[in-house]
Image 1 (tube, rainbow, N blue to C red):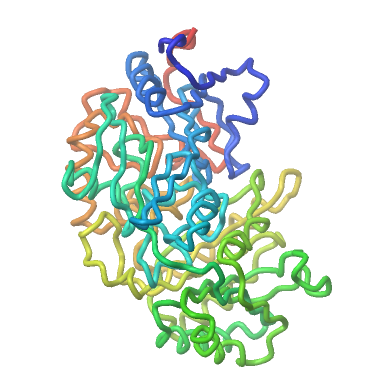
Image 2: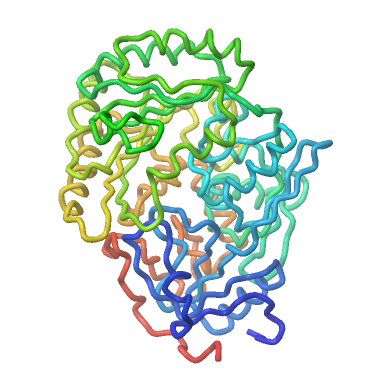
Length: 488
């Protein structure tokens, strides 16, 4: 790399910020790159890709660094870090936003809501825009406005050859198709252009809590309630303890509860009628639903999934909640040991299911729900073995109900066939063709990897550090040492 022309920050192991810069959201990931190239713009990204290729360095791409598998950081190679590229530019006349690849969803919501606009984003505001978008993008607005990728208009991409391309429906449409769900397999996206929609500024939103002992009754009611719900209503069910948030009375802190979070993206009066049956069901411990600024609701769960905690996930799509499936969920959801562990279930359908399979690279659009089983503990706590076992056991109990998986919820120790499960055969095979065209050497393989038909560089055939055998801590080193002096 021509250091004189690189305008960003170069961070090596002797830099005082090295340990902070290599840390990602999941504290169970502990990897040591040779170099972190914190880019200031697209020209820096291009330079970093070309430098890594010329020195045969492993490449990891960091946007928000939020993915549970920890693919944003690698051992011994280079991390191309976009975290300094967070600009968001909204065009209220066209209802669009241009968003740099290192931005977080909180950045987008803040800029768009200044004009009463939004697009489907994650339910945690410190989630990165790039990772969530490239994997599909679940969020409160998805039943009304589709997944995040359904609102993607164009993307600027630095390819494996260090070339900058603009991908859209009419420019490199094959690449644009693959970016909408295929993850980070095809290049470094330095900028996204999104369609925005009128939302808020207030929405009827919040959560209702019932005692964990009511789980079966609540889920049976919830199944019937969401079956007829309008597209404006987004809901998420959380199984775990009530977090110690200021808005929750102290006597409920750490009590096992089933929580239904809701956000209705329509007029407040209409939303009150939609949510009335849910709010009236059973004997809730707490009802927090109220007219709420949309940006506040988007960040309401942020403090329950903090940076640096250790996470282990298993996940699957599920069909509609039959009684026997409800019994399985109720029997396992509260059997974890750590008070921070939880399971979360997203209701899909609506606009998500109306996009034909294959129109984007997102698979399994006809699933009713996505559930993720999340073991969580802090450094120094001894819950790891028990809650990893809980997550795996819960996942095994769901085997006869599983319908593929959302690629962004795949963890650090998944079998390669689970990546195919995320797409289905037809979509996966088409992704392989696009990968073979744009990245035949599999340069970008620190991800949920789509392998090209044949890899011309033997070193690139190694599995990424998230592959089976690498462990949840992600400490396995590549088989051969790269050139440690290449950046000096």
